[in-house]
Length: 265
View 1 (cartoon, rainbow, N blue to C red):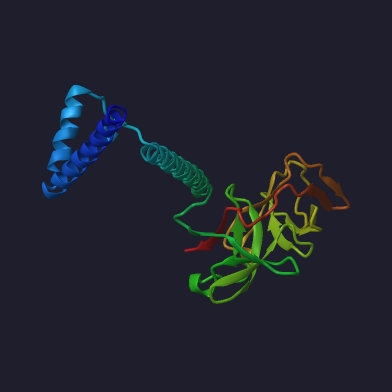
View 2 (tube, rainbow, N blue to C red; view 1 turned 180 degrees about the horizontal axis):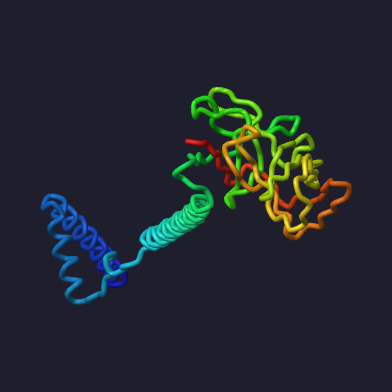
């Protein structure tokens, strides 16, 4: 019986000794500030080397990729805005160039030694289709002052003057009326119905059909001689010492029209 129990006792003794040894190691590790476990871990790492991955090995994290994409988008937006601004500058330069060309054309048509040329523009249109331009008493404007286009043709006359604005009657107005003369001294009344300009003689000193221009004249209270209509390609009817002609209105005045006021110096 003692022989049979001997192996079991040995096993129990081994178990007890193993538990006691483990407890001893734990106690020593605790009181040695875990120095024992650290040394043991290093020993194991030496015996069983392992390859570890460092976070620095990943050069492109998801956050860095997001930042890179965001910066590219912002740069693309910045470049697009620069292109838009450059296009605006190009358009402005072209507009200034065209404006200078038109101004030079007017200067060539008008003798600046005799007349002042004041650029103006439409600033308002009344419910009764009456146009108001910039400039008035502050620019010494007067009733019957002429408004010409970039080609030097009369397209309106001043009908009323206020402090900083003036009313005009254009060739498109059905109540437009202005007097003029031709190179022979014949006198005319020029009116409009909004679609056609009507030329009717008031006094014919000579009956000639080779009339080209009808001009304004200082005798009618205007600044000088400026072309109102060109009859060179218009059918002229002369009968009973009266001249009559009709010209379709191709000119349309607008807020974007280049307009100039003429004043005698």
